Image (cartoon, rainbow, N blue to C red; front, side, top):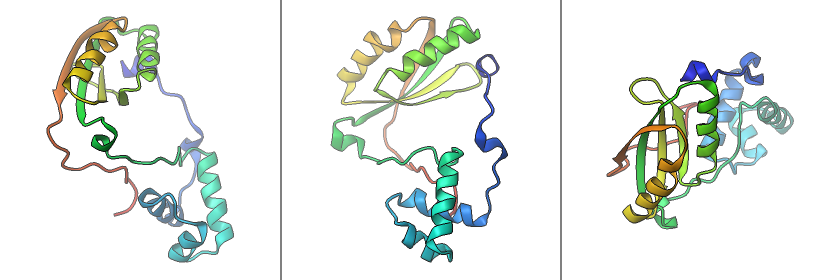
Length: 167
């Protein structure tokens, strides 16, 4: 499926990231609300080059967005489900239709194109089992070209992070 969908070259493919950029990214991943001044002090640069580096990384797509992480249970989305989905047809057109449909489903907070027995792995949040059942029966299963869906219910989160740069 991955080859059928293809990969587009992005502006980040040719960008050079140095140790100062990595240090800035590491700080921003931990606290995106840090001021440029606070970051500059920690990476031992003045504010102007730090601001320019951040803008360059935003413009080139290294920094994709700034987000707020929420406690799912506190916003009444306490049930997390990993859904493995296989499609009946694996051509580019059918894959693109499925991806478009998934983009429209607010319950799906992450979607990965994977290899193996299944084509996609979805991370789904719902209020409870009844809410998930409604999603599964009335939205996910109604998408065209669904071959098989396997749901795995998350019993507890051991590690959850968005930090990929730094220690």
